[in-house]
Image (tube, rainbow, N blue to C red; front, side, top):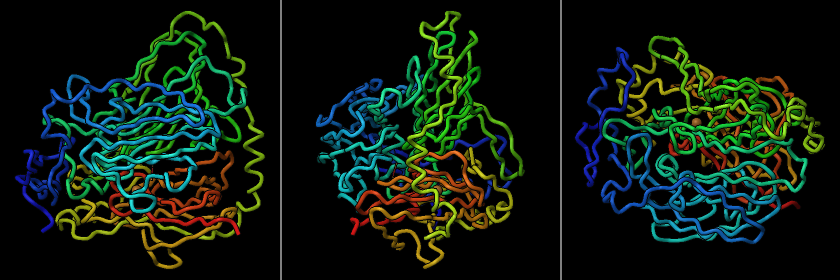
Length: 540
Ligand code: C2O
Ligand code: CU
């Protein structure tokens, strides 16, 4: 009932095949060999002649002013990744989608057309816009059917780095290339420190094997246990990012993680790195860092300075886990190369770079809320998982295994079991312990001007505990404590990753009326139910 054989295929001849597995294979897996998820395999565009699909081009930067209009189309593209070509999706034929650059306080009109084969929408992640343009099917709008259009009006009240993506079957549509950045510039010239240049790095991954792109589930998402980890890491849609700088040059890196599930740990060899801003604001205080952890949907601004000539790697450096043998092993992938020339940069911002700025504007903004930090929570949320008919062989293996879980699952430690999990046989759960309600049944409402303290527990004792990047639409929040320890250096955020076993307190500022989603940003966990709607009504 819950497993099918490998022969199930879709009408375009896409067939299930074993997911790419690490060798040697864990002992327990043979009982699952030959099985396939209980849905049809699906690869968009498998029936199209590749010769008729345009080659994707690298994204353009579109600077827009208040009132400007952008035509945005989601369509099929051919993408060359390494030595291979794939049929994928792109916004305006580009990879990533166009980078939209606007002044703070502006509003743009986006005439969106759906030219892909799935119903879709566009969500403007992190932007506190009008609720009706938030792009959430079933909450703020109907899906935009293939061939149809929708007009979005997007206003940008907050300076920062944002991104846009579909909000329907993200496990497929976003994974295939539908994502782009938005950067909102403050009018204040000294809002951020001086730099010699800027680089926008979108981190992602893609799952491929000898057959090409690994199929998705047609009727339902697959890989809902840990989410779809790719085996090809991508920066701006390419396997490797390369750049050349002069000695002493200060670059501002705008980092966004758009992967379905992978959390990155970015390490910049040879660079001094300074953490400047998070999702929706600068930090109260800048600080030097050795690495930057980005969960799906999170953004950071990091200023870097290279002062010694040479060639340096940009790496994703993780502690991979082997659940079966209960051990960690280091895994390092080079995703970029920076060449530092032995020529000094023309304008040297070294002194400004070495100065850690304290942002009085951010501190004053947050000061208004500090008295609320230590009070009792208004709401609590537990993160857990429920199984509804997974293969029993799999449940057995998992039971052996649940004693050993890392705070963050950095890699696909159980690809076979993940493969067999769908949004039908597994449900990821937000549970409100005060009412016992789960996911879409939870009803929280706030008024504009309310400040809500929300305590989120990521339960260790569950079938498969895992970190969850929790995103709240349309508002901004502060992470005020982790496991009861107050946070020292805050920034306004829209996405926070809660490690396994951790309890985080966030302070939500209800500022924007409407019905807004809150959910896990692992695409497959959202498909498997992990989301709720919260209502913000106008102030009395
Ligand atoms: Cu980036 Cu609800 O999404
Ligand atoms: Cu999740």
